[in-house]
Amino acid sequence: MTRLLVLSDIQTNRGCLGQSKRFFARCFSAPNQKTCSARVYTQTKRNSWGKIKIDGLLFPPIRSEYNDAFSSSLKCKSKLPTFLKTCRRSDPNLEECIKESVQRLKPLLAHGISEFDIPSCEPLYIPEVVLDQGTGAVSVKSSYKDIKVYGPSDFTLQQVKINLNKDRIRLKVHVPSLYLVSKYTMEGRILMMPIMGSGNCYGNYSDIDATVSIQGQKINKDNETYFNVKEFYVDFNIGHASIKLENLFNGDKELGEAMNLFLNDNWKNVANEIKPVLEDTIAGIFKKFSNKIYHKYPLSVLLPK
Image (tube, rainbow, N blue to C red; front, side, top):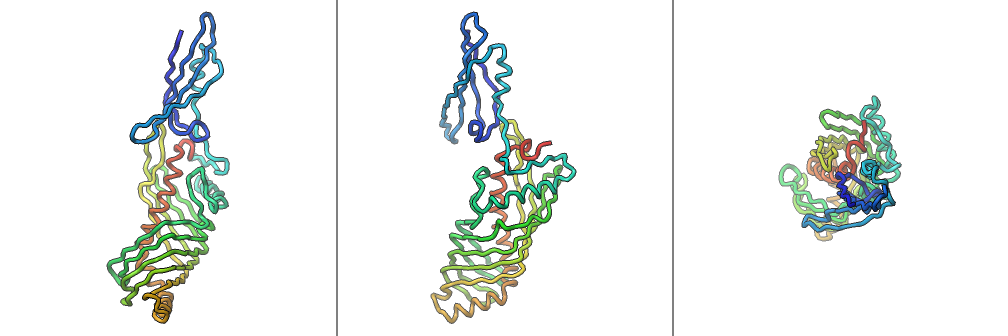
């Protein structure tokens, strides 16, 4: 006698069998015996063109009368890494629990967190940022490549506010200092002063306070509910900044030094002019990081009842 058991879709993680898969079990029962051997196959879509990979896993003999129990035992539930503190939505101190959970990640951020696909944050590498400020006192087109930012993992999460019903998160973060190195190209006017150049760029920023506002939405995938960051806003203030741009005005040392002095004397005015563009750029980067975590684990795992 041959039985074909079709088990339901199962949400798995890497620690189980990889990704969401559909399991098929075929049991072969010998005459007058109550046991059968089962071979389970996983069928996984590899890409959007429909390429299929078939893997086989051999399970030990199973009593045929326990087929239902066998089916349920294969449901591999996703689990958070042990280094992440689990917070429950019913916890009256949920916001403090989340603060503690995030703070636990700080020592790991320097080298990256492979479980969440988060790269090393010391330095944080950003391939390119393009700023096109066409109006106002600062009217420049500039690009920054191979950006390395040192110090972002030394943040302090000061406040967490969560509205579970409206899928809203609000964070207040303090970063003592950031040091930035990159390659730049720039042309335009800053506070009516012409500027042009390309070369190395260095920046020191200290006493940074940021407010992060997240508007999320719940999405259903593989019979599970996930959190998706729909909108991500950043509002930051810098206590002090100093910058140095090399090779300004085709290497004219005197003009370059004068412009760097001018920029550092007027850094607040310059920062205020380009702040909206910078905030949007930073928000886009961290929205991507956030969704890497939220899309990896369902809410039943990230924030159980």
